[in-house]
Image (cartoon, rainbow, N blue to C red):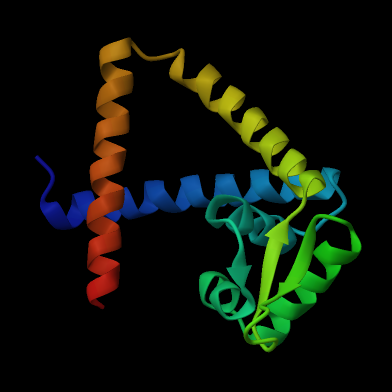
Length: 149
């Protein structure tokens, strides 16, 4: 039987493989759509969170505000997002996703969902539910530990 340390190492390796595969998939989607992976990630964040300030975006993508501004500029020029200034404080700028951006994100989500659906077909229903449950628990625990650090 493997010790916890060995299991943790193996789990880390598997998670890295999944992450690399997911990032590659995002890059492929973005390339087909003529945007960068980073631009697609920003678009996805805005899609999931709704309007977001530039400061919040900087934190979400763990990048300098100049990088976030550059990404927002490109997405705005492409017609995926718009900038909205706060009426009470004009220094606060929010990014809002436009219908063109929503359509793009939804199409990628649909494609990824179809791909995962085809993978899940290899498993019995009980195993599918177990996989989802384990991944939810793992994700929750990982996020809690990350917040403490």
